[in-house]
Amino acid sequence: MTRFENLQQFINTHINAKSHTLNAITGDASFRRYYRLNHDNKHLIVMDSDPKKVNNEPYISLNQVFVEQGFLLPTIIASDEKQGFFVLSDLGSSHLADMLDDANRTEHYQALISLSAQWAKNAGSFCNASV
Image (cartoon, rainbow, N blue to C red; front, side, top):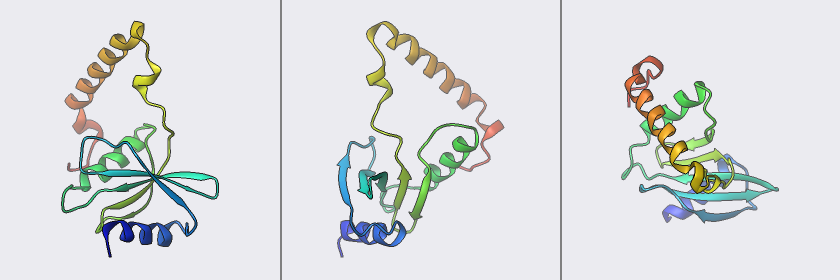
């Protein structure tokens, strides 16, 4: 079986979505591949993150930590960590960069960078995950 066939089997087994469409969507700068799963008028995200290429433990751990801290992130609905397949909630296709205009872009990015620096300094206070 090909990796994509294994992914389809994972979807059919864990989501019971035998009748569905799977459309590739833009991913991040990693080896992960993302798809939008449409079935029964519902949308989910499927992430293919081959564990031979990507260590998925930090993603899983940090996702849980950030969600517990109140961040709105895709929820892991189903997973097969051995194969690196994940079904995630779909937060839509809007991107922060698309919502900013030239007048406020720099201000918002500076605030995000400052906040990220604060998180990095205080990571131990809210993150018990070993990542």
